[in-house]
Length: 166
Image (cartoon, rainbow, N blue to C red; front, side):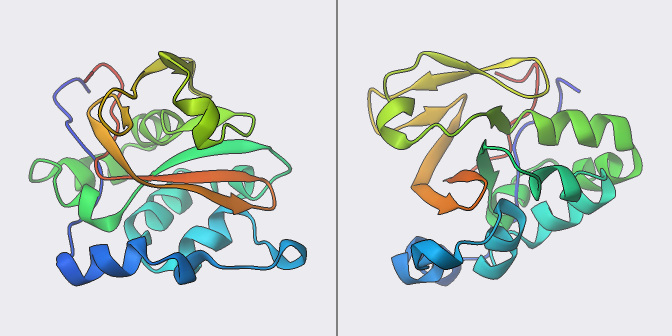
C-alpha cells in the first residue's frame, strides 16, 4: 500500500471555490448533521461517500463519536495514480485501512490541531501534523477547517492520506 499516494478527484477551480464557500456547510446548532450527511450534502465528497459505503464504514461515521475526519475531496481522489481507487474499492480491507487513516477519535478543532506534531488515527497509525505554513496532515493541505457536525468535526484536505506513504 505504500505505493498509493493521495486521495480524491479534482473537479476544477469552480468546485474548489464552491467547496471553500462557508455557506455550503452553514447550519444552525440545533440542526447539525452527522459527519456522513454533512459530507454528502456538501457535494464535493462523492468519492469518499462511495468508499465509505464500500468499506462498510457509513454506520460507524454516523455513530455517536465524536470523530475528527480529515476528509479528502473528490479532487483529491483524482490525484491518485491511475487504477489505485478502483483497486482499493475491490479490496475492502485495504480500503478500510486507508479510510480509517483519515479519522481521529475525539473532536480536534483547528486551534488544537495546530498545537500537535502528530495524531493517532482510528486505524492505529499516526499522521504527521505540520502547522509551519498553513496546516498539513502528512502531505495533504487542510483547505477548510472546523466544519462542525453532530458527532464531530471535518477538516477538508486536498490529498488522500495513505498509511506508510508519509
